[in-house]
Figure 1 (tube, rainbow, N blue to C red):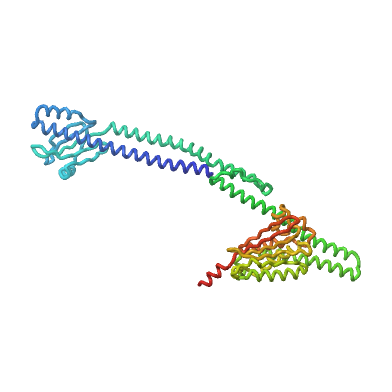
Figure 2: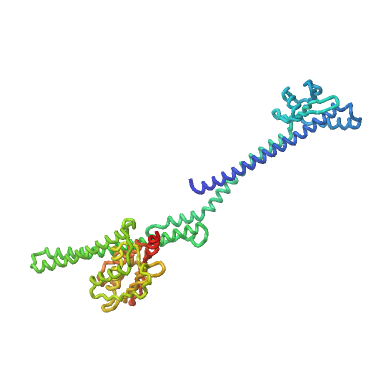
Length: 465
């Protein structure tokens, strides 16, 4: 069942319930009012009959005439009976059928007045005192006119209910259709979006209602999907190129070497070249494994409290071993007075890889003889490492791809590398709930900033206990 039909039925159901309750209340209170009003009229007739029959010899001629006039103003299907105290019938008039049981006579004697119904006939029994003693008067009638009106009211309410339900169903269907029109529009626009059309966006995203919020959220998801697809495409194309190059070189060298017998020196050269390409493939494989390791759950990685300045010195030593000609200017001028603010919670091996990758990039892309500045500081909640080089820089359109594995900007194709360092660093930093940002200008240099949360709060809480 569609949402439109569900809304229509729910709307009609709620309205039907309200209308039924409303109709029942009207019918019930109308019936009660009619019954009470007619009981009062019957009671009046009982008094008029008793006055006319029992007091005819006690009042003046004028009063007797007045009682007679009131007595002859009969009700429809009226039946009046007067009984003596011993239960014998004293007077009876009317063409209606009224059966009075002995227990009802006793009840009137005890209560003084009784009201009850016999099918459609309403009966009033009362005790009337006269100079000749006490009499029991029963007056009854059928409110035929009001009962017909009540029956007409019932028919009107039923017909009105059915007619109203038809109107409500039509109005509810039109209302639900209009209410769901924006959703229908969103569904239509979403159906047009495929893997090849991720640039499309939902149009109803400028308002402030819930549907606009949904469209905004969906558009943000599309932004992420588009970037993910683009990154995946870039990753596949660059990874295939990086892996194919050494494999092609190895296959070519070996095929040439096997075409005819070679000198020993030639075989040694081929083996050395193949070994170099194999090492290149090993580095690529290690990089991929490290990225996979940095992408696992933090609960599976052993974490400890580490001094970030000590990690930086260790990374500096490793970077110099890999790039003996690199020049680093380590700036500790902005270190906090409280050394505990340099403590972070993390995995020493992974964090060391991340810092070494940033230092290596600064060393590789800086001109020979130029210093790369490494500045360590701490703000209120984070440890901040900023590495600045004076290299070739990164173009704005390439900045959004620097964290894609194997991506390399066009202006650094001639520099040895695989495009794994920064993606691996980003994964490690995010794993430690930190952040990495890059600010770069072509031919001016690049600034890489790492931020990691301080562990001083955790240490203080632990020492408190």
